[in-house]
Image (tube, rainbow, N blue to C red):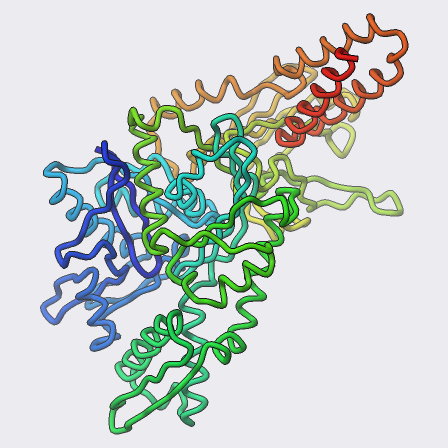
Length: 563
């Protein structure tokens, strides 16, 4: 059995896909939501879930939450007499979820599909896979949270050409994805987000306002008192989704406190956070080359999306009300279950195909000439741009910068900055070239091939000698894939290593245009222009742009033949 898991910042869920559709499993307390909190009791036993969350208030020094935000870092947290990395804390939550699944299914679970924020870096995704291994399960597939939400809403069943924006505001992360249904495929056009923006930040806003109004400093409260105050404010935040004004208070140490806040003031206080949300949203729309009026539906998911100010902001930006009929805390978990069913090839899902995108740009280091003709090194040259649909493969040629150069060092980077020093280095290839050849005849073809499981294959071929070099970069080297699995993945990728100019659908369309050129003397100049334009678009290697122009080109040829 393959399970689907939503490993969230605030809560986590687990379930599966069976003949009745996606199904979530309850924990021993009867709740589908298990708090993503880990604690240590006085006897040194580890607590996970609601018991740990309660201890977060009573013994804050012996409990930890929000560690999803630290995934991919070396940060350590002390609980009792030992230190825990974020992967280990997440693994403890996963173990608790797996126990719930085993109790519900009556059989052990060996494999899972886990949802992650769309904007998680490779290091963060690697850490998530490691957490799965530490919990004793195989994690071959990660699915972006907005994509999972789209599956939960059944957007794959909408008509061709339907376009959606999934807006996912969880406890600790914010993601937005633009998706389209095309010929039975749920295609992700663009993703963007903020890994440090979520419901906890809105809670911080309330805490700052409350302490200011009461004339208290955060340093005047003990850890337990502050934990108690945040619990009151969390309740207030939730109630403000249903009521225009709420009051919180009670005994805080020796003080009796009382505080009121209404929706309008909360929205004003949170305006900087709302502005932070606009940036990824606008970026995703730009990357997808779409305007708000071209979007058919907007889906809100994530517990923090319940806040009325979120729906108002989205409605203003898109001019329509968003979909919110699924439980916002459960939508991603349900979608992960659907993805697990797809991974298991459930008979009900055979017709569903899902694509994803590369969240960051992948490229290499190059040197460029300045205005005076001097070479300057350290520039980042993208090869696979962010939001490219994966699996994908692209190739470009590079030349040495100096005559008599014997080697070409090809550094591989991930990031969005024009300078490599501000991006993340993933690896490098040393390529031997012939120093006797002129620089302009010593080209090296560099190909990047990236699959849905995060494996980046870098290949370099020296044009003059045909000598081939290869570098394989996994998200979790030595743990994600064994040699046989790597061999199978590379065999599957082999068919991708085709430049768009050599794909059959493009060849066929150009052949048709050339036939019409021979047949229609009066339309030759027009046809030649169309052919030149389509060949130029093919050279961009932008699959989405090629597909759009192929469709337009085909319609134009249809009209010409009918005329």
